[in-house]
Amino acid sequence: MTSANLFDLIRAGALDFDKPAIETSDGLSMSYRALFDRAGQAANALLALGVVPGDRVAVQVDKSPDVVVLYLACWRAGAVLLPLNTAYTLAELEYFLSDATPRVTICRPSAFDATRDLGRRLGLASVESLGVHRDGSFATLLARAPADFEPVPRAGSDLAAILYTSGTTGRSKGAMLTHANLASNATALAETWRFTASDVLIHALPVFHTHGLFVATNVALFSNATLIFQANFDADAIVAALSGATVLMGVPTFYVRLLAHAGITQASTAHMRLFVSGSAPLLPETHEAWRARTGHAILERYGMTETNMITSNPFEGERRPGTVGFPLPDVELRITDPETGAALEQGATGMIEVRGPSVFQGYWRMPDKTREDFRADGYFITGDLGKIDRSGYVHIVGRAKDLIISGGFNVYPVEVEAEIDAMDGVVESAVIGLPHRDFGEGVTAVVARSAGADLSEKDVLAALKSRLARYKQPKRVIIVDQLPRNAMGKVQKASLRDELRALYSGE
Image (cartoon, rainbow, N blue to C red; front, side, top):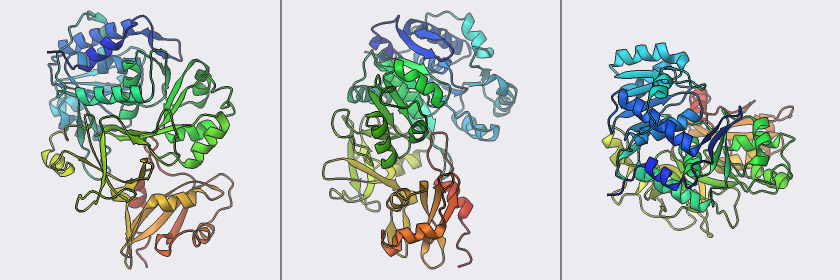
C-alpha cells in the first residue's frame, strides 16, 4: 500500500533537492535536501524521546525555519503535530497540554523552566526547548542525531495535526486534521493558484495558525517552491523582498499597512504574479486601492481551521471585491436554513455548510460536539452565514453568533458595516448586538476613525438615516482609535460584546 504520509508526498514532489526551500532575511538558505536531512535528525530526536506513531507533539516556539523542520519530522515519525499560539500564557497552555496529553512538548528556551514545571505537574513525558538560533535542549538532541529516518507509513485517515480553535464561544476545541485533509487542500490550492517550482513566496504569517502553517507552507512545499521566511509582518522587509518574489499571502491588515508604504508601486510589484488575502474580510475599498496602486487584483479566499480552504476567487477571471469566489475542486457547499437545515434558493442568506476531502474528522475528545456540528449526510455546519449570488460567487455575511435580532428583525452586521466603512474619516467598523430591554438586542456600532478625523456618533447616525431601514440603524455608535484584533487580524467582536454588555442597562 502506498503511504499517504504528508512527508512522503512533499518529498516525492520535490524534483529538485538542491534548490532553496527556505530563505531568511538574515542570510540563511536551506535547500530541500538540507530541510529533509534536518527533518530526519529531528524525527530521530523525537524517537529518542519515546515518540511512537499517533503521539502528539506540542510546539510553542518562535517562528524560524526549524518550525517547518519540526512539522515535517512529526509526520515522518508518524506523530501528530500540535501547534500552539506563542501568545498563550502558562495558564492557557495548561488546558491545551492537559487536553492533548502530548508525548513531547517543545517550547521557547526562555519559557523552558516554567513549561517543564507545568509538564511535571501534569505528568507529561517530556518537555524540551528550541530557539530561533538553533539553541535549546531539542536543538542539541537534533544535532547529535543521524539524518536517515525511514518515514512511518500513514493512511490518509491517520491524524496529522490537531489545531485548537480560539474558544471565543466556550472551551477551545481541537480540530483533528488528517494527512488526506491537508494533502487534498494543498493540492487543490496549488492547482487553483497555478503554483510551480518557479514560485517564491513571501511568508510573513504566524506558523501556529492554519493560514501560515498549512496554506502558505504546504502549498509552497507541495510545489517545490521557495519560502522567504520573515519573522513577522514588517512592511519594509516585504517591500524589499518583492523584486525577488512572485507571491505574497497575507491578512487584510497586511495590505492596509502596505498601502501606507511609499514603496508599494506598480514598478515594485511588477515581478509579483499573485497577492492572496484571507483569515478576515478584505474591505472592497482596500481591494480597489491596491488595484489602483499596483495594477494587481488581490485574490480573496475563504476557509477555517476545521475545513482548510473552502473557496477561492479565480486565478483567471474576475476577482470580485466583497466575495470569496467559488468552491474549490471536490468541495461541496450549500446554503441552508440555520434552524431546519433545509437548503435555500440561490441568493438567499443562510448557514454555510460544506462537505469534501479537506473537512476535518471531528473535535479531539468531544464526540458530542462533533455530532452536533455535522449533518447526517456529512455536511459540516460552519457557523458562518453567507449567500451565493447569480454568478455563483460566495459572499460571507458573518458568523451566525454575530447575527443580531433586534425587535424581531434579523440584522446582518456586514450590511451595516459596509455603509459605515464607506464614510469619510472611518478606518473600519464592527457592528454587534448588545442586550436591550425593549428590543432584545440593540444594534451597536464600534467605529475606528482615522487619525485627525472630526467624526462623532451624531455624524454616523445622521449619515445612516437615509441609507438603512430603521431597524438596522445603530442605537449607539462608540468611537475608538482601533478595534481589538487577534494574531491573524480578525476583529474580536466577542471582546467588544463583553466590554460593552451593560451599555443599555439603564434604558
